[in-house]
Image (cartoon, rainbow, N blue to C red; front, side, top):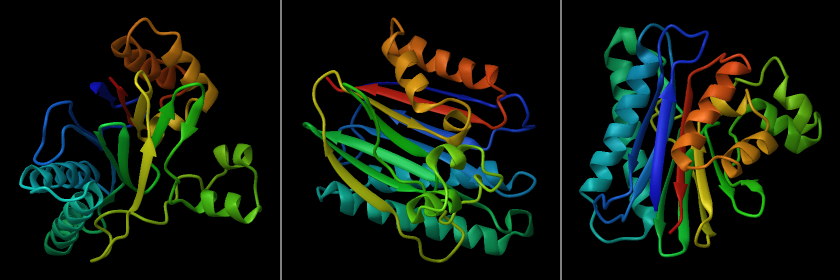
Length: 240
């Protein structure tokens, strides 16, 4: 798996509260590891939460012994949650901080995915498919049939998430195992991308770029062109 990544502050924010990790080389018992996180909290709490989360997930996985990917992810996420939660309680400037997180590793032709919050993972092959499900208020409203997916995109409460790492002493992540084929493309991103660009447009940009590196830059540029209301993080990886 060959990966490319970029994060950008966007057009409206004073700091970048996103953080990512991108390795197409082995990390602990994993052959590769991709992570994106979108922090929240006042002052500098959000950027601290996302960085703390990602760094501690990487640290935990780096020390992992051979176990199932879901078990390794779960232990790493629980450990990161504990650290973010305890720092938020210990230091007044970090009170209430938390973060989304989406992560994946490829083993053979199986992609293992973990997510908390509304940062997403997509698989792009014949078409674009959202693998993760947002832990957000509008997603719950869509599932209940109260609003449509299109209405959710412009809903005034679209940024309210129902689950985040570091907010409580325990957190539950969703896990997915999906089969992938050679040349499939994996996209991890924060909502600074998906709130600014429709899925079909994301697919078009990725498929019509001459390289994945250019696709990453084009996605970030398009999100900024459409308003850039939030920090933008994009990771693209090609299955090989």
